[in-house]
Length: 118
View 1 (cartoon, rainbow, N blue to C red):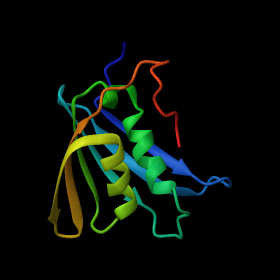
View 2 (view 1 turned 45 degrees about the vertical axis):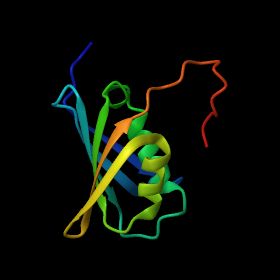
View 3 (view 1 turned 30 degrees about the horizontal axis):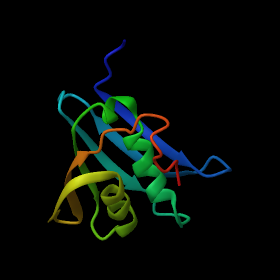
View 4 (view 1 turned 90 degrees about the horizontal axis):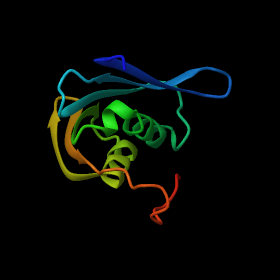
């Protein structure tokens, strides 16, 4: 398996226009760090939640117990989705950024009755 220490996740619209990105740092074996960016164009509802899902669905992120996220201060859609997908959330403001510390919930094995997707 190839070791990847930095990844990028991108969400595009149907026409290929970039809407959101996440730069992911996997240098620490216990903590995944993600910096989320939303483009300044009008972004449809749900894109921010999709970005969080895309980050948490990266196998190398899901394999770590902890997540640190930097997101735009006041972006409640991203924060709400992190709260839905993670545990033990701590947040703090740093200028125009919100810093989030969270524990990643372990993935449920298939067939355990968990809710599928959104």
